[in-house]
Length: 482
Image (tube, rainbow, N blue to C red):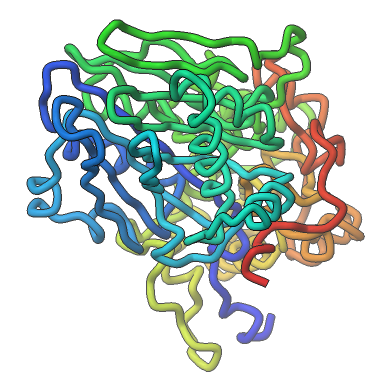
């Protein structure tokens, strides 16, 4: 393989989630900024481009919101001084990776709107498929946008609806009637914390409690990080309103037929942290199951099963448990390399993948290796990792993927690229095997996905092309930047 084929960004060939959201309302009046920070820290895997926090005092002036946000990781954007200066007992936080809207500070969330009824701070995970139409309608009625993200479209519609309805939760419900696509929302008004999920339930959102405070978070791992107990998941289509009186619930937008729901299967395969539970299903259990299914459906004789860290490790363990082939560690990951490290130049001999991942030669030399990964997108990373195993002395490299082949783009908040960039689109499994240099290659069977999600209704559009919502006629991702 030529050197110029090796020098690419490993992040370009791995999928990324769009966002993580977090909110808290402390009824005892304690400042919540530092708690939001630690909650976002636990959700950092969901977005590593920008982050932000907005807090307010429910006993203070209604229009006063303290906000800090910026580009980078949580520990790069926030200092102890920043957090100590942010006073308020209610707040929302956000970590972002852009799939729609460019990667700029202006697009960092939470978004804070000052309008006739007060203030609104909003954090959003997901993508709307009808955002361009909604945005154009607002622009023609005089709206001026500060960002290029669909989250601002949502915030505008909530603010406009609030003028004609009695409370903010009713405004959220009215706005939801216009939104099509994926959204988990955490919204702060002067005296309320509101959470909402789209009726399909694409993205996770759960409720937690710590002492006399209630929390909304993308994943349960964030609750555990701050010492909160899990209360329940927000239902697909539900709006929850947290006030001093407790939790109110509006389920009018929920589907009566839960089979219409469409949770993103990649939360179980890759996005969510393995210690999280999504709609009652353990992510760790799902990944173990995926590995077991691979061992049952695609067995091969080998000496060692290894996972590509981190998301391949659970499936590798499951494969080992089912097959009886020993599980081992073949890769050492540099924990200090984030997505934003200085990437090697094309002329350099350093590869971005090799900087992030090294092979333990002693573990693989002379052995037949089964390498488990969560996906193959463009194929470039897989080809390099297989090559690294061979360079380390592996006799055979058999690749097993804990997801079916990607054939279609995603419009709901996952950065699966257009079809012409997907290696599985237009290539057979055998052709892909040859392109990545593996001795054998097998993917998870489509029919296993439902079992993996413990029979929950899921979205498999990126594999099957069966979108739960009609996709846009053209790829709208990043359309505001064109």
